[in-house]
Length: 183
Image (cartoon, rainbow, N blue to C red; front, side, top):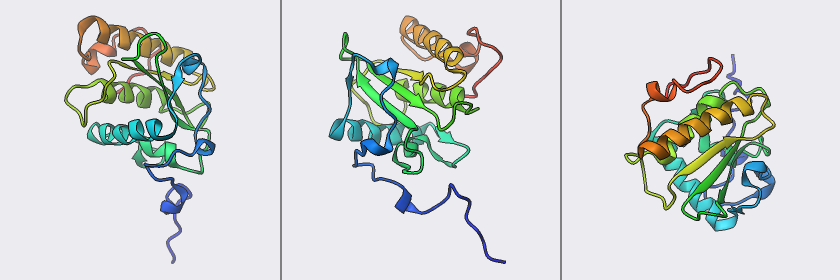
């Protein structure tokens, strides 16, 4: 009996390279990035290569597709999903990252966005970057974006106030509707 590949496990021909910036394969910058300097070209690609390394170190993987979440930006089959980045207009030491999931009901959005925040802001992971902090939000197209973004804002405030990432147990004590993350 021949082995039939799953539709999401095709070869590398469906993926752009990490050095490429292909706007047609990326989500449009959303409201969290409005009024800020959106990274494009080499700047976007450079930060995204760093993202791949930090996500690999913290195993930020999309369980549906079975790959490092950074690879979603390169997947030409999901042109409206992935991360976009912008340097904060008021504070150039802050990077804003907006995650657009593949569907408006993606059950992993909370976990993936929280894990991304932790990977980017951890001191013990991968190559260093120039931003402190990297702020993360989920695009409003996701049905739970308001709840998830409130939780991310609370995590960010805790990080800013304490000067370090709270443990997973501490961040899970922030108000939310029962969703938890293991990271």
